[in-house]
Image (cartoon, rainbow, N blue to C red; front, side):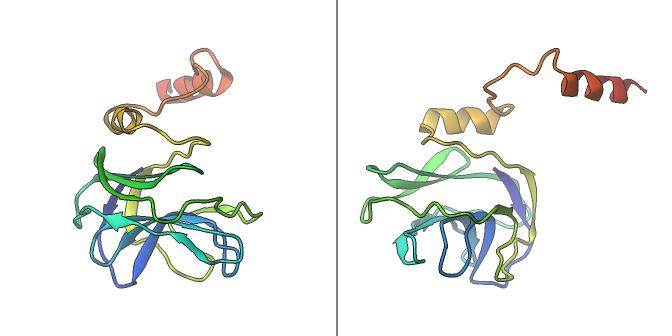
Length: 159
């Protein structure tokens, strides 16, 4: 995720999150201290893991990522560098039915920033993969060359 924050004023601002009160699942945050954080909850809303660290200064572009593995650690990356790891709480994070939300939560918290790209993966990415995402286009499972949306986009841009 590439993000440029421009103001704060909440305890933390959600970049990407899923869940709601009593059903929190996960969230990638920017805290008032301008640290990046990644929160995971067990079903019922109890805290699971909430590491935060690194610096995401205002009015600058930064690449922020969070990873989690069931029997591994919760990690936060800023600009491709691992800034904090939490191994104190391991276990299954909640997997509820709420939609994924970008730049806000159902309880009114919002992100006051500009977002360039958001991607989510069903597995933990390595530090090298995170660096690759930061430096170039998103990795895709399918080559978009020759597909309808790619052709349509090219045709529209030529007109």
